[in-house]
Image (cartoon, rainbow, N blue to C red):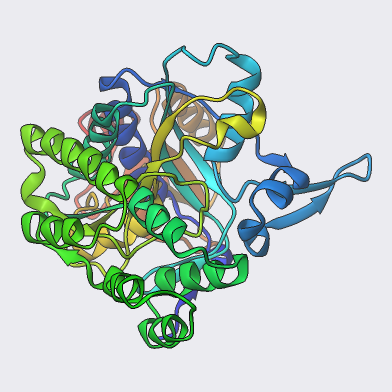
Length: 404
């Protein structure tokens, strides 16, 4: 079946109710961890992404501002959040924990849907360089899924620092390095192997580089393989930090869900150390991705370490629908009253019920409507409200409404 472009779909009330429930659940997790809830600007200056993050250019939706400046609709929350925080919180030692739910304007693909923008929730922690911060960020991400009923999950944990330390050893050109990263990100191992074979590197370096995308699996055995492939001190140091993060996850009760993956990177090119993705219930795509980005804030004149993640709530909705985790769709309105003639008594009665908080539709017999949207459907005539059961006075029908 062809994928449905979500951007061309109407979001119905029942879906909105489920999205509201999901949002409330994840915001509760944010608050439990001491996060402040914020919103970043919808529009961002094109140069912010074009200059510092050219890898995002192809994902941008561009527009022209009233003064002729080129703007983009945010393809990412982290960059504008860090930029805004550098202006509003100039003390680099201040700990900042932010949570958000925002629309992000870039393409996404699910099993049966895709679109050019999606609702994203996430957390960003600024000013904390410790591995314990990384561990808590990952726990929050897992708790996002648990808060909506998803407990069967896999956490893929990797290290950009390990990969970067290897790349430093190889002295590749910018073009070669870009290709290596691209093929790793896309898991194009055929092209990756061919590229590596053509690089001017030593036999040992080639062996380690070719093993990189294969470093995936259980924690202990995969970590041992990664240690054996270390070519320098920085690679070893990155694994020490990774071990501390894993210990945090172990104490928190999530270590049994962790797989190590040293071959994945991210098209969001600001990550500097730990990176992770979380998959739910055998889904082929990740719902959550994140990591540590200690160099990003320096681009905006307030250097500070940071770690965070984002969750695609549109993809989460798809997974929850397939797993029967969405709330049952029930009629959204209380009463539909069908009439031939809207007399004074009916008009006053409907107004009175609405003032008392009941959702009531008045509909002429000349119109069609969906009875399934209403808990009660009654026809009005001569002061009585008739259902399949019998006729009710205004007071009797009001009593039925009060019992809903």
